[in-house]
Image (cartoon, rainbow, N blue to C red; front, top):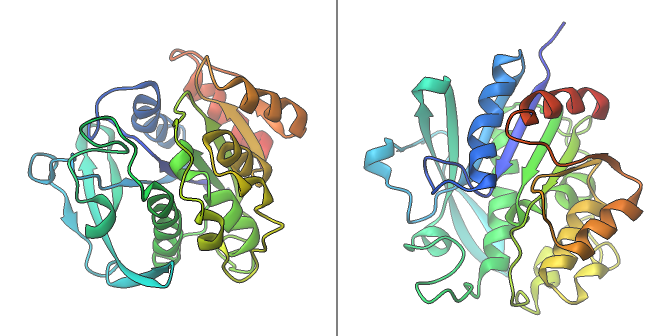
Length: 267
């Protein structure tokens, strides 16, 4: 029987970022699932705070060199990789000088959210999926962690749906306590209008705030996981009313086995 293939798209992974509920899951889950017989690939953004020398990142030339057009501007896609030796797993990093070469992750030194976080989310989501196409690797499950990955379900269902690599893919979206306060750029929805995506598809982003972006991720996913014990109540209510396959919050002692079993329910 062929191994199930799980693609992890994570906003945070430790040790590249400080430990948080999301970053620890981003680190431990792929390893645990791989040890249970699955095949995995793991992606995160190459934030400027990730120390390349200490973590031994290097560019993957054969995967780099593509340009992604966002808001009529070309942005070069650079792919880097590092290995977590103890876990026997690699982490791929989505890199771009315009979006990720700054010392902070999603907020500046004063805690102010970056004004281009909307475009960073677009670049990250499309960058991962274009790289997976280059790898010619067809995931059975695409598991998204954090709001920065919330566009992936939309792209899979509306833009890449005809690509044979993704035709059978099921999308799982994990929701965390990772809200942002400001609304994203008011032009955000216009930047999402690729072939196959209409204004109607993204109508929920008329006000591009955290709750509505989370709703978009939920709407286009096949299954939802409550990744943190406490999440935004409006988002939690939307999950419950969505009728999607759902896995409730799991403790650090149970989450790997619970998630692994949940994947079998999803596909």
